[in-house]
Image (cartoon, rainbow, N blue to C red; front, side, top):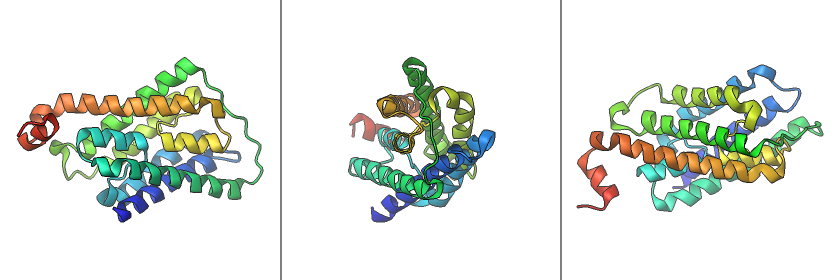
Length: 221
């Protein structure tokens, strides 16, 4: 399991590092969502064959509920992802120094909905392009996953900050990009979005899966 955890920490590190560097001024301005989505894309391609390329506790939860990650891996993956985010915070601070940051204090209702919807979209895409039997062996999965985050960041970044990822939420909170009192919004909405996406995937793909996979989830022999 160690190689998987190292890959998850590395991928999450570069994702959160990119978020901090392109959002905190002088950043990438209007191009920030493209940089963030691209960082996720390349890390998914780099580590997907080792760990699955989650880099996101909500994705790991969705993949677990999908039946493609074991219970023994769930919490260690989360720990590795959060550790990667914390290391990225230290790196961003070393690059950005004492940059003045004004924290976003999002509207609770709007932010909850925005984060839920696009975390749902992200995990739903991950499950369909990276775990479904019908798309097995495709070469576009990383691009699809990265662009989902890009779309979400453009669409609702101004509403919620566009985390769609509890590890990213921890990172942007520690960097002062989001008020600490709003962290619960991301944790709740992101994990709920991941869980609902897995339930939806399982319901829609049940007939297309191998009988053994269906039986394993239902508890039938």
